Length: 242
Image (cartoon, rainbow, N blue to C red):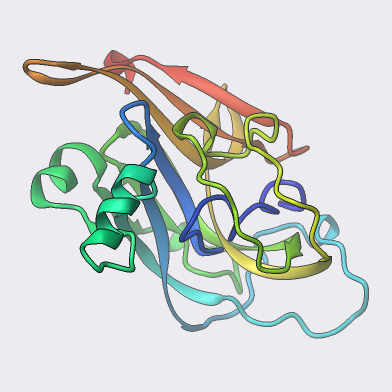
């Protein structure tokens, strides 16, 4: 599985982004995001679960071992300009906020369990079975994959509107063209079926309407890219099917 064309925006998709953030939930309510960042330990054995023929290499240098994945850390990034202004007025320089108990249980929590030993290929890293509270019907697989990505120098990135989080390049405003370099690195990757085919899962967009009983979810868009060729995929899921 090559993610050459799927992960080049990691680290610059929104303020506070990290290459270890492998899932983003955005909402119609405002521009704040719930992000899911891989928790890592020390290096592990390089995975052989990915076809080496799909990972381009300029030379035969030894492949560095990937980190050991320990699950996902879920938290808010309050990147909506109104929230940022309030945080700065309070003297708060970080836009991170923790999910509260109700948010974890009812909306944005995530469960991660080590996959069965029979699912680990010889020499491979430990994959995880992942279920998001926002989309419990779509079980996902988390593991580190060696990816050829295009890495830009540090560039200020505009706030991404909620409907633009994900790998839809037409929806995301292009940043200025900085110096870039090609490099291969290990990245945490979520995979699942989208539109019936194996894809990387990049983002979830929740469209809702505020009612006196609370938010009513109208639909959920699951976005990712087809593993076989990198073509972006979006599947619209109704609440009854989530």
